Amino acid sequence: MNVRSAAARLSAPMGVRVEPQAHAGADLTARRARDIRRRRLTVLGLQLLVAVVWLGSWELTTRLGWVDKFFFAQPSEIALKLWTWVTQGTELGPLWDQVLTTMEETVGGFIVGSLLGVVFGVALGRIRLLADVLSPYIKGANAIPRVVVGALFAISLGLDIKSKIATAAILVFFVVFFNAFQGVREVDRNLIANARILGAGNRQLTTEIIIPSALSWITASLHTSFGLALVGAVVGELFGATSGVGELIYSAKNNFDADGVFAGMALLAAIALVAEALITALETRLVRWRPQVNTETRI
Amino acid sequence: MASAIELRAVTKRFLTPSGGVYVALHDLDLAVEPGEFCAVVGPTGCGKSTTLALISGLEPASEGEVDVFGKPVTGIVDGIGFVFQSDAVFPWKTVLENVAAGPRYHGSTTRDARDAAREWIARVGLAGFEDRYPYQLSGGMRKRVALAQSLINGPRILLMDEPFSALDVQTRSLMENELLSLWSSTSASVVFVTHDLEEAISLSDRVFVITAAPGTVKSNYRVDLPRPRNVAEIRFQPRFTEIYEEIWKDLRDEVLVSYERQKRSGAA
Image (cartoon, rainbow over all chains, first blue to last red; front, side, top):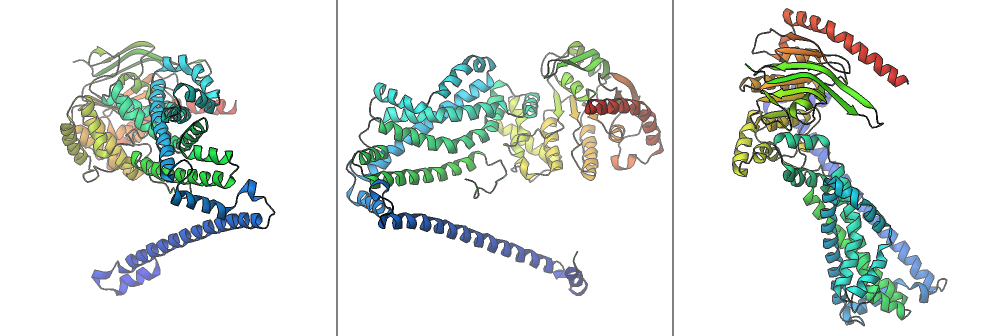
């Protein structure tokens, strides 16, 4: 007890005894809220500063001719290009269609790849024999640079959305698979023992103990794997497509249009950022039993 | 009358990661009567927890016989409860779902399981916390969840592996009293493993002293203190001190042996 509250206790009438301390508490939360707000503003300001310095120096050096804008593009030209795409459409058709195509391929590949990854990861994690038999094949397949499989898919599945989904899915699959597998292997032995004693059968063990426990590993892998799905979709488009952001970049490259390449990259970055936010929301829902950590400082 | 639990000439060997063989229990005999509260004390690493794993059916014995209610143990034993040393409540389930797990695994409908769970949650003093996740509870509250989770199945045997060792002293004696009052309303036999002799005596009817590894029963003592007991106060009774001194003489030698061994293996 501090001196102030002791004094308050001596002098104040009954009903308001705890008032000074409650007041101090309110003070503290107000100050804390102010600190958090201030910090957020500082971070935002510095983030803006980084953007200004980066884009400004790029713009400046290309305008002054120190850097050739034919090869390295120019922020204002890129912005202009994006604006033209938005208002007048691209050479492949309306911009929205291109973004939508790439999104469909990415999300499709992401869903197919992660579902297969979880199913195989859990199955191999649970069934020892299966894991021992299949492990050299999986390790071997994992060692191949998997984007080249996109070429095979372009031949076998054709140039439409299927080959892109397959390419994206195979990139996603291995990441999710290894995480799910590891997640299943790392389940706390005590929790399994407890569930068995409580009467859980094999199936209940899998659905109620193993999978929820592995979920934190799996959701952690979803962040990386969405990026990979995007890579798969774009690479798939490079192998041959009629629409999509990757195809947009490819045709810009063929025209020696550096601005177009960068504009396409900016679009991909925007898609990735939106997806990241969605996945973080999904993760929070899936593992809401976990103490919430401050996700702001995470990269 | 048949014993609730009977271990006859039980030996348990484990393969160590380096390929050797570790004998955790050797030629151990132990019997627990129905409704009896037994404590098992012994130095660290003497195979106390292994004994519980054998009784529950989580681990098979290497040699000897383990009988529960006259039947040899071949798998997870029906009608058994187990409270683990570490937190074993499911972190992704709420308090209600955690406690309702047992009945659901035994085929109750979700609704019935939840009704029973609410009752048990209230009985362990957690009413109002049904929707919390374990990370939102204190260590003592998580132990209450674990107790309710085990007791809701109406076990005829309750195995407890140093359940309160991670709690602070005050919470611990509260939980010990709580356990005694919950137990007195059941007819379950309890095997309570602990390294704390005071805890063992204040809770139980019988104390088994296990030797340093390989563990075997060195001696067993009846604790003839009256019930109901208040764990926080029973320690001041002269009879408590007598029993304590008697058992401690036995236990001390084993603790010393185990300590010397640890020192040596630490130095090697």
